[in-house]
Image 1 (cartoon, rainbow, N blue to C red):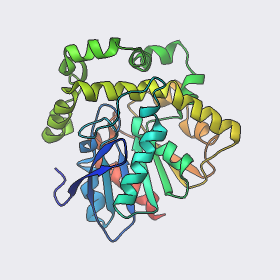
Image 2: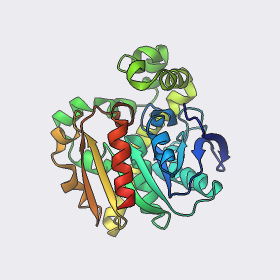
Image 3: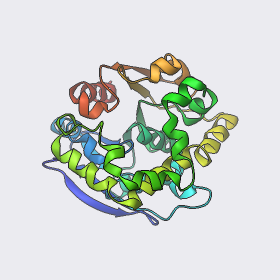
Image 4: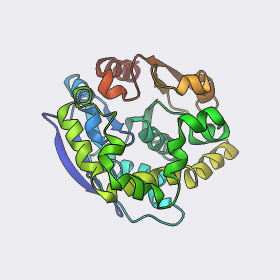
Length: 289
């Protein structure tokens, strides 16, 4: 995977972030993975962007994959999207980029959103995949959502999820992770990651932060009238359930972004693995517009 890419480790203060990256003559784009994936999820998309001249940055988020972070804090701030977005900004600065395009999928999209809200001077364009703001999900929670996305509320419980998942992480995470679809090396990297109890705990802290401190940060954004002013692209998987649960995601995102566009891609949830050509084209079309 990632032929022609370098792998670096960036010390951001209280975290050490492993990042795959390549230089290019074109604009830089940072790709942020979701749960429980690592930066390897981009192994088909990133080379297509590189081949078109883009500088591509693929970090493992704090605590995911090979990246490490601090121990959990009582208020979950150590794994808040604000803290992880700060990591990503430090990675960009370490690699020499002041402004860049930021794309996130699933949990990575919440990091991308927080980076764009907290550091709008750094985010030239924003691409968010398979997500709504956390607060929008919470305020729309009903029996259908709670049943379909029950893992959000399970992961947020103290201690119990670690005991359940670490008893057999492969049985928890791998039944729907087909190595033929993912790619053998990507699958192997995921398998190594989930076998580390510290990774599992950090991933759960991501969700605990999501329903507590991250939610408070978003509600403060809304109260202050803070919005996304950069061009924002919203993409979602046609064969996932975001649109079925909440309707047209663009209608919701217009409450947050001034210049929003988007569409669905014919894929299951893991777009980068299942529809890499379509996703790479969407990213390049948006960045070059």
